[in-house]
Length: 99
Image 1 (cartoon, rainbow, N blue to C red):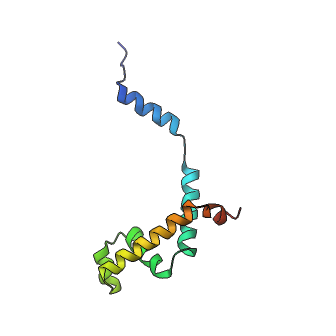
Image 2: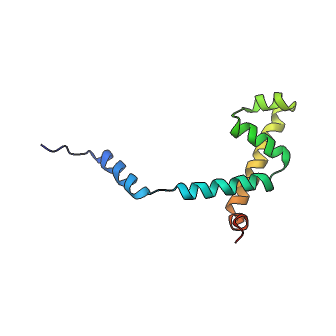
């Protein structure tokens, strides 16, 4: 007797088949994000974003490391993230690609 897939297994197979390979899009987004990080945030925002996301430090650890208040770290992270979002969302992708 043949094994029949249940509905969730069938859905998973369908999603997998339809999703395709998005490595190229992810690489392009990463390239744009790195360029925006270099060009569109302040050096202090870049430093804190790098410590938070790349080094995996939390806000209190960044605060201690840099000798600033936790609220300063939080505010700087939020402003840096907002700048990156704006850059990537509102057409800066075309500017970054050189179109």
